[in-house]
Image 1 (tube, rainbow, N blue to C red):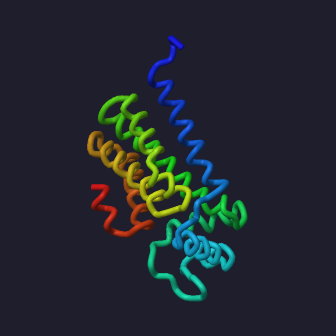
Image 2: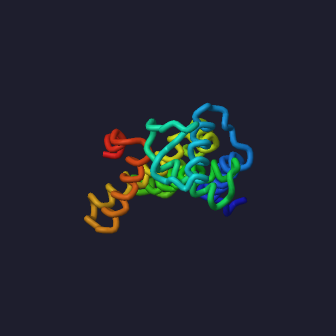
Image 3: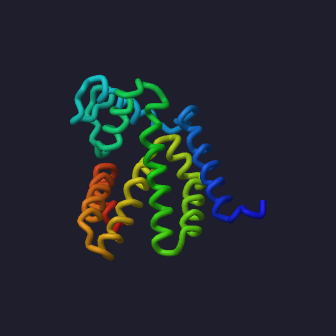
Length: 186
């Protein structure tokens, strides 16, 4: 155990947190009414092949932007209509958020601080539940954190790649929650 550095422990804890978060793929919480509504809307989108309009029980659903529904409907197309396919896109975006939380903290401080930030992110109860219950936060943090990271990189270096990635992730956040996310990003 002499050769174990704090970073090795942090990597092990992060891996454990990812596994715990991943358990929601096989036993989702789905305890809110929103999860049920969103799954039905995505199922309708996937089965009707109408990727433009959101419908619930034959009525237009004008409450939310389309992006999470598109991803869930695509997941339903790929993996069938089941709880795993419903939770998978939110879980992936939750991991993207954790990765870019690490990258942001590493950019401002150092690698060890980045690992601690990722561990805190992955063990936050609200974010764990958001990933398992597929709330907007699971998507949003997977869009906002990379957008912030790439806007900072662009500000520091004026790289076109950073500008494009910052714009893409900002656009995805807009398509998930609407215009107010720009305030959070900037």
